[in-house]
Length: 183
Image 1 (spheres, one colour):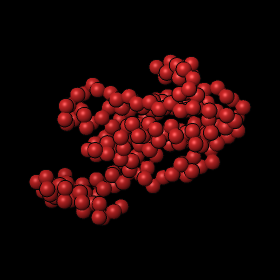
Image 2 (cartoon, rainbow, N blue to C red):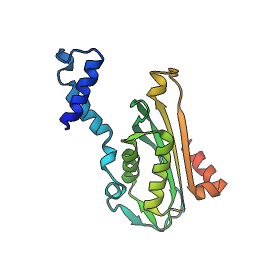
Image 3 (cartoon, rainbow, N blue to C red):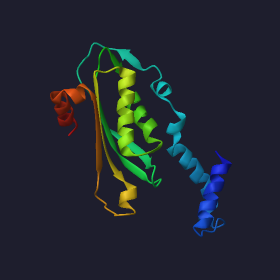
């Protein structure tokens, strides 16, 4: 764990007027540093490492969908969490990816300072790259603490983003099938 990062948290707490010797805060800078390193571990991962060769030959060319992948990220504007779910679909062309690897790709991009719009595109492009699919669709639905806890304080707002690549963009029937199956 970074002592330097823990030092920054000490400074933040002091600037907020907190007493770092208070019982509840004694180890907070170290815990906060460790938590932040965990929450941003996606910076230390890459697509090749995450997929780890889990691409398999398949003659299936029908839509593969993984729904409701839990998603946790931090808004790059306020460093506050956004939490939701991600739905991923692709049309294989001779290769399929190990099921858990899709969730790991979502986590890799989620565990970075992000905006939801960019993350949706990054996930779609990564799935397309590793599977060489004829199309990929990704939908993310998330609640943003930066909107719920501060600013306009809207508790029930949910942001939805989607990226459609290949056949999901060019073929309305493919897109419609995906949207129907994730609802």
